[in-house]
Length: 352
Ligand SMILES: [Cu+2]
Image (cartoon, rainbow, N blue to C red; front, side):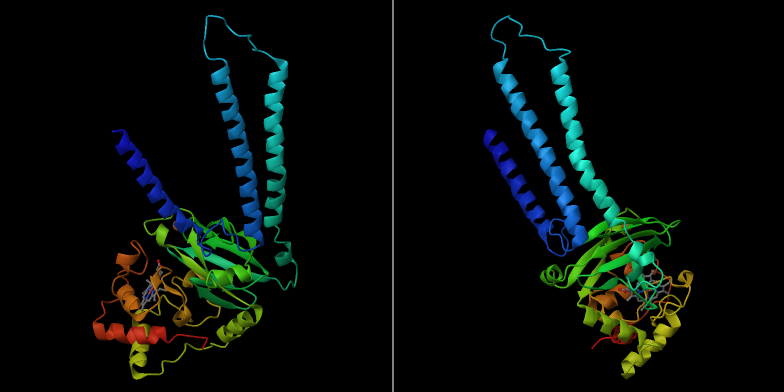
């Protein structure tokens, strides 16, 4: 019996080790901070954990000491300390001090993290991204650059990026665990904050940070992922220019892709835009903008970016994201049509 309990415990810890080891990835872990905001948040985590562990240690030590020292040996009752002023003051003052040590840096950091004044200044040259969340996808609009993209947020490394965040349907929450957040996206107000993406850390993470929705929003909440592509400034400027240069939908080059484009124009274009300009009203942007779909790192935020998965997605999005708003909104497609669509969509690239 005892042996069984021991084995149970060991296997539990083994499984936990396996599971928890998944938490340390540089593209996903708040414990591997990759930027100024993440560093600040991580320092606060360390400080509060340290204080908590300290309190637990002191309490456990006193507890054990008292257990041993005042174990009942005879009928004598030890000296009673009820109402001791000295003790009461000690255990009131110490927690107050601890709370102060915790509160001062936390409040200071909170104000610093919420400081978006550079974005609000008139003719500021701060980089601004408007994030809009929808069931179950993300839109990223660059108002100063006048372009829109979705699913893959593109940012330059090592500089402050300012965010306006809101939602078009229900409450979601924008979180890039390795870089900072999270912050709610609401329907009735715009939240603002900034992040900085560490270039070196991004390289370790394969230039791709994982983003998540952190507010339960529906059956596919856990699949409402996005990615952050981190580039150096030059490459970022190149990307912006390449996007801006797409004035008309990218023309299909092969026959197959041309067929795909025709099908797309019949069945899909009512929801999906293939031009990047931010001139259409938000209410009309009811699906991910596909201008640079061929450059994406994932399909629908979660599937590997290849032809096979793209066909699977178009054939039956419901299997991958239950409750998504694309299912059933277009005619059924046969294999030839899927081939053509795939050829067309994969060719939607703005970068070589
Ligand atoms: Cu969600």
